[in-house]
Image 1 (tube, helix red, strand yellow):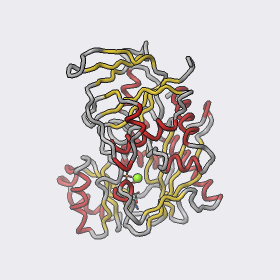
Image 2 (cartoon, rainbow, N blue to C red):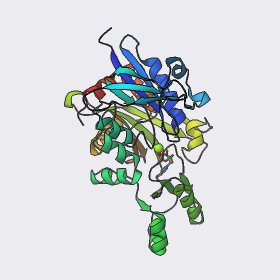
Image 3 (tube, rainbow, N blue to C red):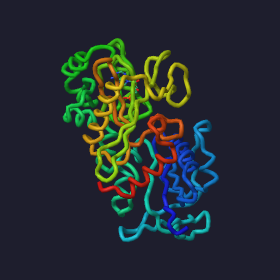
Image 4 (cartoon, rainbow, N blue to C red):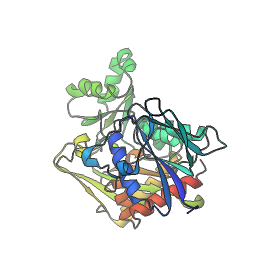
Length: 366
Ligand SMILES: Nc1ncnc2c1ncn2[C@@H]1O[C@H](COP(=O)(O)OP(=O)(O)O)[C@@H](O)[C@H]1O
Ligand SMILES: [Mg+2]
Protein backbone atom coordinates (compact mmCIF):
# COMPACT_ATOMS: atom_id res chain seq x y z
CA UNK A 1 0.00 0.00 0.00
CA UNK A 2 2.86 2.35 -0.90
CA UNK A 3 0.57 4.87 -2.53
CA UNK A 4 -1.52 5.57 0.53
CA UNK A 5 -1.66 9.29 1.31
CA UNK A 6 -0.11 10.21 4.65
CA UNK A 7 -2.08 12.93 6.38
CA UNK A 8 -1.12 14.69 9.62
CA UNK A 9 -4.35 15.75 11.32
CA UNK A 10 -3.93 18.69 13.73
CA UNK A 11 -6.74 19.24 16.24
CA UNK A 12 -7.56 20.55 19.71
CA UNK A 13 -5.59 23.74 20.13
CA UNK A 14 -5.33 26.71 22.45
CA UNK A 15 -8.64 28.37 21.67
CA UNK A 16 -11.99 28.09 23.44
CA UNK A 17 -13.11 25.83 20.57
CA UNK A 18 -10.64 23.07 21.61
CA UNK A 19 -13.35 20.51 22.38
CA UNK A 20 -15.27 21.19 19.16
CA UNK A 21 -12.07 20.64 17.20
CA UNK A 22 -11.42 17.32 18.97
CA UNK A 23 -14.97 16.19 18.19
CA UNK A 24 -14.41 17.15 14.55
CA UNK A 25 -11.19 15.11 14.50
CA UNK A 26 -13.17 12.07 15.65
CA UNK A 27 -15.66 12.59 12.81
CA UNK A 28 -13.01 13.22 10.16
CA UNK A 29 -10.89 10.25 11.23
CA UNK A 30 -13.93 7.96 11.14
CA UNK A 31 -14.68 9.05 7.58
CA UNK A 32 -11.15 8.59 6.19
CA UNK A 33 -10.82 5.37 4.23
CA UNK A 34 -7.94 3.38 5.81
CA UNK A 35 -7.17 1.86 2.39
CA UNK A 36 -6.43 5.34 1.07
CA UNK A 37 -5.08 7.22 4.06
CA UNK A 38 -2.52 6.72 6.74
CA UNK A 39 -3.23 9.26 9.47
CA UNK A 40 -0.80 10.75 12.00
CA UNK A 41 -2.80 12.29 14.84
CA UNK A 42 -1.36 15.47 16.32
CA UNK A 43 -3.42 16.73 19.26
CA UNK A 44 -2.59 20.24 20.44
CA UNK A 45 -3.19 20.75 24.17
CA UNK A 46 -4.64 23.92 25.73
CA UNK A 47 -1.04 24.93 26.46
CA UNK A 48 -0.07 24.57 22.80
CA UNK A 49 1.93 21.32 23.11
CA UNK A 50 1.77 19.15 19.97
CA UNK A 51 1.21 15.62 21.23
CA UNK A 52 0.92 12.31 19.42
CA UNK A 53 -2.48 10.64 19.93
CA UNK A 54 -3.71 7.12 19.37
CA UNK A 55 -6.30 6.18 16.75
CA UNK A 56 -8.69 4.61 19.27
CA UNK A 57 -8.62 7.64 21.55
CA UNK A 58 -9.48 10.10 18.76
CA UNK A 59 -12.02 7.86 17.02
CA UNK A 60 -14.07 7.85 20.24
CA UNK A 61 -14.27 11.67 20.52
CA UNK A 62 -17.72 13.18 20.20
CA UNK A 63 -19.39 16.49 20.94
CA UNK A 64 -21.44 15.00 23.81
CA UNK A 65 -18.45 14.58 26.09
CA UNK A 66 -16.55 17.79 25.05
CA UNK A 67 -13.12 16.11 24.86
CA UNK A 68 -10.04 17.78 26.37
CA UNK A 69 -6.51 16.71 25.46
CA UNK A 70 -4.22 16.21 28.43
CA UNK A 71 -0.44 16.21 28.08
CA UNK A 72 0.62 12.61 27.44
CA UNK A 73 4.36 13.31 27.53
CA UNK A 74 4.95 13.22 23.78
CA UNK A 75 6.04 16.10 21.54
CA UNK A 76 5.52 16.01 17.80
CA UNK A 77 8.06 18.08 15.88
CA UNK A 78 7.37 19.63 12.50
CA UNK A 79 9.87 18.88 9.69
CA UNK A 80 13.26 20.38 10.53
CA UNK A 81 13.56 22.14 7.17
CA UNK A 82 11.81 22.55 3.85
CA UNK A 83 13.83 19.72 2.27
CA UNK A 84 11.98 17.03 4.25
CA UNK A 85 8.41 16.27 5.22
CA UNK A 86 9.41 14.00 8.05
CA UNK A 87 7.65 14.44 11.37
CA UNK A 88 9.31 13.21 14.53
CA UNK A 89 8.05 12.51 18.02
CA UNK A 90 10.02 13.03 21.18
CA UNK A 91 9.10 11.10 24.27
CA UNK A 92 9.81 13.61 27.02
CA UNK A 93 12.03 12.95 30.03
CA UNK A 94 9.06 11.75 32.08
CA UNK A 95 8.60 8.96 29.55
CA UNK A 96 11.75 7.50 27.94
CA UNK A 97 13.43 10.55 26.39
CA UNK A 98 13.84 9.02 22.92
CA UNK A 99 13.10 10.64 19.56
CA UNK A 100 11.48 8.56 16.85
CA UNK A 101 10.58 9.22 13.24
CA UNK A 102 6.91 9.35 12.27
CA UNK A 103 7.92 9.14 8.60
CA UNK A 104 7.18 11.51 5.76
CA UNK A 105 3.72 13.05 5.47
CA UNK A 106 2.11 14.30 2.27
CA UNK A 107 -0.10 16.96 3.75
CA UNK A 108 -1.11 18.59 7.02
CA UNK A 109 -4.82 18.94 7.78
CA UNK A 110 -5.41 21.54 10.50
CA UNK A 111 -8.96 21.23 11.78
CA UNK A 112 -8.56 23.93 14.38
CA UNK A 113 -10.97 26.75 15.15
CA UNK A 114 -10.32 30.22 16.48
CA UNK A 115 -7.03 31.82 17.52
CA UNK A 116 -3.81 29.77 16.95
CA UNK A 117 -5.43 27.54 14.36
CA UNK A 118 -7.85 29.42 12.14
CA UNK A 119 -5.98 32.70 12.19
CA UNK A 120 -2.93 32.04 10.03
CA UNK A 121 -0.52 31.20 12.84
CA UNK A 122 -0.24 27.43 12.32
CA UNK A 123 -0.52 27.99 8.57
CA UNK A 124 2.60 30.18 8.92
CA UNK A 125 4.41 27.36 10.72
CA UNK A 126 3.59 24.99 7.82
CA UNK A 127 4.76 27.58 5.30
CA UNK A 128 8.08 27.99 7.13
CA UNK A 129 8.97 24.32 6.60
CA UNK A 130 7.27 23.90 3.22
CA UNK A 131 4.65 21.43 4.42
CA UNK A 132 1.55 21.37 2.14
CA UNK A 133 -1.66 21.89 4.12
CA UNK A 134 -5.42 21.84 3.74
CA UNK A 135 -7.46 25.03 3.80
CA UNK A 136 -6.80 28.73 3.77
CA UNK A 137 -3.38 30.34 3.70
CA UNK A 138 -1.82 32.79 6.14
CA UNK A 139 -3.45 35.97 4.89
CA UNK A 140 -6.98 34.66 4.24
CA UNK A 141 -6.96 32.91 7.62
CA UNK A 142 -5.73 36.00 9.46
CA UNK A 143 -8.18 38.39 7.90
CA UNK A 144 -11.11 35.98 8.10
CA UNK A 145 -10.47 35.77 11.85
CA UNK A 146 -10.87 39.52 12.27
CA UNK A 147 -14.41 40.82 11.77
CA UNK A 148 -13.30 44.43 11.23
CA UNK A 149 -10.77 43.52 8.55
CA UNK A 150 -13.16 41.05 6.86
CA UNK A 151 -15.89 43.68 6.62
CA UNK A 152 -13.44 46.25 5.28
CA UNK A 153 -12.30 43.80 2.56
CA UNK A 154 -15.87 42.85 1.64
CA UNK A 155 -17.02 46.45 1.49
CA UNK A 156 -14.08 47.14 -0.82
CA UNK A 157 -15.29 44.32 -3.08
CA UNK A 158 -18.78 45.85 -3.27
CA UNK A 159 -20.43 43.28 -0.97
CA UNK A 160 -23.11 44.51 1.45
CA UNK A 161 -22.22 44.33 5.15
CA UNK A 162 -24.05 45.76 8.19
CA UNK A 163 -22.94 49.32 9.05
CA UNK A 164 -20.51 49.28 11.97
CA UNK A 165 -17.98 51.10 14.09
CA UNK A 166 -14.81 49.55 15.53
CA UNK A 167 -13.44 50.90 18.81
CA UNK A 168 -10.66 50.37 21.31
CA UNK A 169 -10.69 51.39 24.99
CA UNK A 170 -8.33 54.22 24.07
CA UNK A 171 -10.67 55.55 21.36
CA UNK A 172 -13.51 55.66 23.86
CA UNK A 173 -11.39 57.33 26.54
CA UNK A 174 -9.96 59.99 24.21
CA UNK A 175 -13.07 60.94 22.25
CA UNK A 176 -16.07 59.69 24.22
CA UNK A 177 -18.63 62.04 22.66
CA UNK A 178 -17.51 61.43 19.10
CA UNK A 179 -17.71 57.63 19.49
CA UNK A 180 -20.97 57.78 21.40
CA UNK A 181 -22.48 59.74 18.49
CA UNK A 182 -21.11 57.34 15.88
CA UNK A 183 -22.31 54.31 17.79
CA UNK A 184 -25.77 55.68 18.54
CA UNK A 185 -26.03 56.71 14.90
CA UNK A 186 -26.11 53.00 14.03
CA UNK A 187 -29.52 52.66 15.67
CA UNK A 188 -31.13 49.96 17.83
CA UNK A 189 -30.96 47.05 18.16
CA UNK A 190 -27.17 46.90 17.88
CA UNK A 191 -24.76 43.99 18.22
CA UNK A 192 -21.54 44.38 20.15
CA UNK A 193 -18.81 41.85 19.45
CA UNK A 194 -15.08 41.26 19.79
CA UNK A 195 -13.14 41.65 16.51
CA UNK A 196 -11.52 38.23 16.88
CA UNK A 197 -13.51 35.55 18.66
CA UNK A 198 -16.06 32.96 17.58
CA UNK A 199 -18.84 30.72 18.89
CA UNK A 200 -20.74 33.90 19.85
CA UNK A 201 -18.36 34.37 22.80
CA UNK A 202 -18.50 38.02 23.96
CA UNK A 203 -21.41 38.91 21.63
CA UNK A 204 -24.34 40.95 23.04
CA UNK A 205 -27.53 42.33 21.59
CA UNK A 206 -28.24 45.85 22.80
CA UNK A 207 -31.80 47.15 22.70
CA UNK A 208 -31.31 50.20 24.92
CA UNK A 209 -28.18 52.44 24.98
CA UNK A 210 -28.08 52.02 28.75
CA UNK A 211 -26.85 48.45 28.04
CA UNK A 212 -23.95 49.61 25.86
CA UNK A 213 -21.21 49.95 28.48
CA UNK A 214 -21.82 46.47 29.88
CA UNK A 215 -21.88 45.01 26.36
CA UNK A 216 -18.59 46.76 25.53
CA UNK A 217 -17.00 45.34 28.70
CA UNK A 218 -18.14 41.83 27.77
CA UNK A 219 -16.59 42.18 24.33
CA UNK A 220 -13.37 43.85 25.57
CA UNK A 221 -12.85 40.82 27.83
CA UNK A 222 -12.24 38.84 24.60
CA UNK A 223 -10.34 41.31 22.42
CA UNK A 224 -8.82 44.78 22.49
CA UNK A 225 -10.90 45.85 19.48
CA UNK A 226 -14.68 45.70 19.49
CA UNK A 227 -17.29 46.14 16.77
CA UNK A 228 -20.65 47.77 17.29
CA UNK A 229 -22.92 46.75 14.43
CA UNK A 230 -26.33 47.76 13.25
CA UNK A 231 -28.74 44.88 13.91
CA UNK A 232 -30.03 43.34 10.66
CA UNK A 233 -33.59 42.03 10.73
CA UNK A 234 -33.73 38.98 8.53
CA UNK A 235 -33.11 35.27 8.13
CA UNK A 236 -29.68 33.80 8.88
CA UNK A 237 -28.47 31.82 5.88
CA UNK A 238 -25.11 30.21 5.17
CA UNK A 239 -23.35 28.81 2.11
CA UNK A 240 -20.44 26.39 2.01
CA UNK A 241 -17.65 27.20 -0.45
CA UNK A 242 -15.00 24.91 -1.91
CA UNK A 243 -12.09 26.16 -3.96
CA UNK A 244 -12.38 25.25 -7.65
CA UNK A 245 -10.14 22.53 -9.05
CA UNK A 246 -7.34 23.50 -11.47
CA UNK A 247 -8.08 27.22 -11.47
CA UNK A 248 -11.85 26.80 -11.91
CA UNK A 249 -14.08 29.28 -10.03
CA UNK A 250 -15.15 28.44 -6.44
CA UNK A 251 -17.97 25.93 -5.97
CA UNK A 252 -20.84 26.98 -3.72
CA UNK A 253 -23.33 24.67 -1.99
CA UNK A 254 -27.06 25.18 -1.54
CA UNK A 255 -28.02 27.40 1.40
CA UNK A 256 -28.51 26.30 4.97
CA UNK A 257 -30.60 28.23 7.46
CA UNK A 258 -30.33 28.88 11.17
CA UNK A 259 -33.96 29.24 12.10
CA UNK A 260 -34.23 31.15 15.35
CA UNK A 261 -37.58 31.09 17.07
CA UNK A 262 -37.36 31.15 20.86
CA UNK A 263 -34.17 33.18 21.34
CA UNK A 264 -32.75 36.64 20.76
CA UNK A 265 -29.88 35.45 18.55
CA UNK A 266 -27.64 32.50 17.72
CA UNK A 267 -25.68 32.50 20.98
CA UNK A 268 -23.17 30.10 22.53
CA UNK A 269 -25.77 27.95 24.29
CA UNK A 270 -27.69 27.46 21.05
CA UNK A 271 -24.50 26.52 19.20
CA UNK A 272 -23.03 24.01 21.63
CA UNK A 273 -25.36 23.34 24.54
CA UNK A 274 -28.29 22.32 22.39
CA UNK A 275 -30.47 25.08 23.91
CA UNK A 276 -33.99 25.30 22.52
CA UNK A 277 -35.20 27.76 19.94
CA UNK A 278 -32.70 27.18 17.15
CA UNK A 279 -32.93 24.73 14.28
CA UNK A 280 -30.45 24.08 11.46
CA UNK A 281 -32.27 23.52 8.17
CA UNK A 282 -30.59 22.40 5.00
CA UNK A 283 -31.47 23.07 2.24
CA UNK A 284 -33.14 26.35 3.20
CA UNK A 285 -36.42 27.31 1.59
CA UNK A 286 -35.19 29.80 -1.00
CA UNK A 287 -36.18 30.54 -4.59
CA UNK A 288 -33.81 29.49 -7.36
CA UNK A 289 -33.03 33.04 -8.33
CA UNK A 290 -32.39 34.10 -4.74
CA UNK A 291 -30.13 31.10 -4.19
CA UNK A 292 -28.19 32.01 -7.33
CA UNK A 293 -27.66 35.55 -6.06
CA UNK A 294 -26.53 34.30 -2.69
CA UNK A 295 -24.11 31.78 -4.22
CA UNK A 296 -22.58 34.44 -6.47
CA UNK A 297 -21.96 36.71 -3.46
CA UNK A 298 -20.46 33.80 -1.47
CA UNK A 299 -18.03 33.04 -4.31
CA UNK A 300 -17.09 36.72 -4.59
CA UNK A 301 -16.54 36.96 -0.83
CA UNK A 302 -14.28 33.89 -0.95
CA UNK A 303 -12.26 35.44 -3.75
CA UNK A 304 -12.19 38.85 -2.02
CA UNK A 305 -10.28 37.37 0.93
CA UNK A 306 -8.05 35.28 -1.37
CA UNK A 307 -9.54 32.06 0.00
CA UNK A 308 -8.19 28.58 -0.64
CA UNK A 309 -9.64 25.19 0.22
CA UNK A 310 -12.87 26.01 1.97
CA UNK A 311 -14.96 28.60 3.77
CA UNK A 312 -18.44 29.11 5.10
CA UNK A 313 -19.99 32.45 4.23
CA UNK A 314 -22.70 33.63 6.67
CA UNK A 315 -25.48 35.97 5.60
CA UNK A 316 -28.52 37.86 6.78
CA UNK A 317 -31.27 37.90 4.19
CA UNK A 318 -33.65 40.82 4.63
CA UNK A 319 -36.01 39.59 1.92
CA UNK A 320 -34.54 42.14 -0.47
CA UNK A 321 -30.83 42.12 0.23
CA UNK A 322 -28.13 39.62 1.15
CA UNK A 323 -25.86 41.09 3.82
CA UNK A 324 -22.67 39.16 4.64
CA UNK A 325 -22.14 38.74 8.38
CA UNK A 326 -18.83 36.89 8.40
CA UNK A 327 -16.58 34.33 6.72
CA UNK A 328 -15.34 31.28 8.60
CA UNK A 329 -12.11 29.93 7.13
CA UNK A 330 -12.33 26.70 9.15
CA UNK A 331 -16.03 26.23 9.76
CA UNK A 332 -17.52 23.68 12.16
CA UNK A 333 -16.85 20.35 10.54
CA UNK A 334 -18.40 17.57 12.63
CA UNK A 335 -20.56 15.25 10.50
CA UNK A 336 -23.69 17.17 11.65
CA UNK A 337 -22.25 20.68 11.18
CA UNK A 338 -23.65 23.13 8.65
CA UNK A 339 -20.67 23.00 6.27
CA UNK A 340 -20.85 19.24 5.54
CA UNK A 341 -24.67 19.31 5.69
CA UNK A 342 -24.75 21.95 2.96
CA UNK A 343 -22.46 19.79 0.79
CA UNK A 344 -24.50 16.68 1.48
CA UNK A 345 -27.63 18.54 0.32
CA UNK A 346 -25.62 19.54 -2.78
CA UNK A 347 -24.67 15.93 -3.56
CA UNK A 348 -21.28 15.53 -1.86
CA UNK A 349 -20.96 13.08 1.03
CA UNK A 350 -18.82 13.69 4.14
CA UNK A 351 -16.07 11.23 3.06
CA UNK A 352 -16.07 12.72 -0.46
CA UNK A 353 -15.74 16.20 1.03
CA UNK A 354 -12.71 15.12 3.05
CA UNK A 355 -11.13 13.53 -0.06
CA UNK A 356 -11.73 16.76 -1.94
CA UNK A 357 -10.21 18.98 0.78
CA UNK A 358 -7.11 16.79 0.97
CA UNK A 359 -6.71 16.83 -2.81
CA UNK A 360 -7.07 20.63 -2.85
CA UNK A 361 -4.56 20.99 -0.01
CA UNK A 362 -1.96 18.84 -1.80
CA UNK A 363 -2.37 20.86 -5.01
CA UNK A 364 -2.62 24.29 -3.36
CA UNK A 365 -0.63 27.16 -4.74
CA UNK A 366 -1.15 30.03 -2.36
N1 LIG B 1 -25.58 42.75 12.85
C1 LIG B 1 -26.32 41.73 13.31
N2 LIG B 1 -27.66 41.70 13.11
C2 LIG B 1 -28.42 40.66 13.57
N3 LIG B 1 -27.93 39.62 14.27
C3 LIG B 1 -26.59 39.58 14.50
C4 LIG B 1 -25.72 40.63 14.03
N4 LIG B 1 -24.48 40.32 14.40
C5 LIG B 1 -24.54 39.14 15.07
N5 LIG B 1 -25.82 38.69 15.16
C6 LIG B 1 -26.26 37.45 15.83
O1 LIG B 1 -25.23 37.01 16.70
C7 LIG B 1 -24.70 35.75 16.28
C8 LIG B 1 -23.21 35.68 16.53
O2 LIG B 1 -22.55 36.75 15.89
P1 LIG B 1 -21.36 36.53 14.86
O3 LIG B 1 -20.96 37.84 14.35
O4 LIG B 1 -21.76 35.52 13.86
O5 LIG B 1 -20.19 35.98 15.80
P2 LIG B 1 -19.42 34.57 15.86
O6 LIG B 1 -18.14 34.76 15.10
O7 LIG B 1 -19.15 34.38 17.30
O8 LIG B 1 -20.28 33.52 15.23
C9 LIG B 1 -25.11 35.64 14.82
O9 LIG B 1 -25.20 34.30 14.38
C10 LIG B 1 -26.49 36.33 14.85
O10 LIG B 1 -27.48 35.48 15.40
MG1 LIG C 1 -21.16 33.54 13.38
